[in-house]
Image (cartoon, rainbow, N blue to C red; front, top):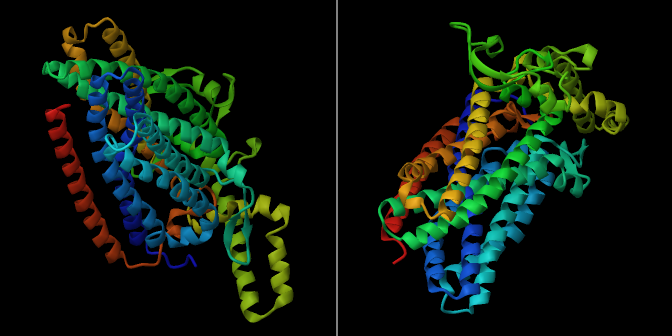
Length: 517
């Protein structure tokens, strides 16, 4: 099923999926956060009856609507690509991966898509309270969509609650709750949605700051800043806390990703945490394992060991340890994992051959191996390594992972400080006098999108070469289609998504200039 893979097909399929995901993720975080900000604003309107709050709500609702529509379009294309570009993946784990996506479509997407019509067109057609309930249901539905999609993504990062069916050569769900309540899924969901809340808060604060600098819509701007800065401040604390939990989880579930984002090539006892650093590479050397040190870095001694294992003298494995192995610490070398993975693949192929030949005794014997706990623990768990040919293939792009992670973290703390400054300044009613702070907020809008994209680069690039951790590498997940067809659709999507983004920005800018009139 996975033989004779064309690497150019794999690379173009990866590029197309990455392109779609990047564009989709431009729109999703704003939807997640702005929907709740709008719901809070409308709640104030319904409780106070003040028309100014209705105008404020309707202004931000207009911007939300433009973003929501394009986000849905890119999201639908993204889901179709699992079937068109990654059919081997869909076959191998479709019984598991498809369940949360089906729930997302049936429950969450229908919920938000149903009530979004009432939210936009029901102001004069339904009561205030019903309209308010519709707005809250859109916000809840949007975040429920994120929940189920992130549960599916977390399972790819850390497979749980399933078993392998050797007769069908596919994985099947064994325990739904292990999939749904996986620690990886919980951390990923909380961290991702709060990143969207912070992004939306910065978005609202930045646009409101522009209004204040232009001396327009001052009531809208000041009240929006207070709502967004409170919401963003709370979200920033949760974001940092959940990010710390997610990183600690990587130590146990994806140690190679952890080593990559920390730029740690050689394991250390009492490892220091590199707060800021510039990675160095030997001149003309393209082997990523030869990136040995930093040309510049600021390090907190022993703190990486504490962050990973809870004490300052713990050993933290690096990239080289994970590739070459360390028998003293029960770490198998990748060469051994590859050998065991090939044995697991061979057993599956032999079983299929025996079935095709009608050799029922041989077939039954080989099938029984996949239900033997020793075989599952020592061989099938490395099934995905059987597709690899060289140990270094398990190393992700370390510099990209390292820089993306550190950019995300530094900007996360920057946004926390920004929320505090704006909340304090707004409560003192000194916003008009703080022109530097207002300009900084406008400049922070592209920065918060950069941080958001960096987070997904960490999540997805850091786990390469795996589409499912240790079970299925990306090269084995691709559909058997022509490379040229993927190239054509890649450029079609690139042009279409760019046009949609330009259209959205032009509409947003026009609506912002119009204001709440």
